[in-house]
Amino acid sequence: MTKRIRTAIQTEFEAGALHGRGKIRNVAEGGVFVGTDQVPDQGELVVLSFRDAKGRDVDVSGLVWWTTAETPGPHRAQGFGMRLLEESEAYSRFVDSLL
Image (cartoon, rainbow, N blue to C red; front, side, top):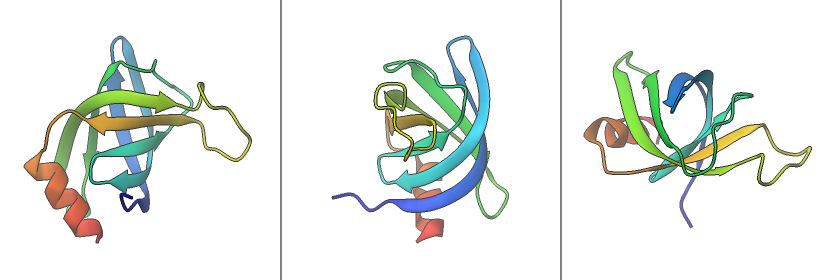
């Protein structure tokens, strides 16, 4: 099982015509969960932009793998899970900085 790291990192994202803001709530090697009330559709291409702990800009792209709209429940923050499309050196450096 992939280790998840809890975070509260501010992010902006684009998915089609949707431009939103949220918080990266957890990070794993292959993707992230973004807490937001502006939830894109499952399967959409999404680009996240945020800063790492050293203030470096990190931009990653992936697919909306799942959303809370598909699995609603009071125990979950509203948002979406994003799966990275390809490995990114900047993202790997970011994940390593959290360990």
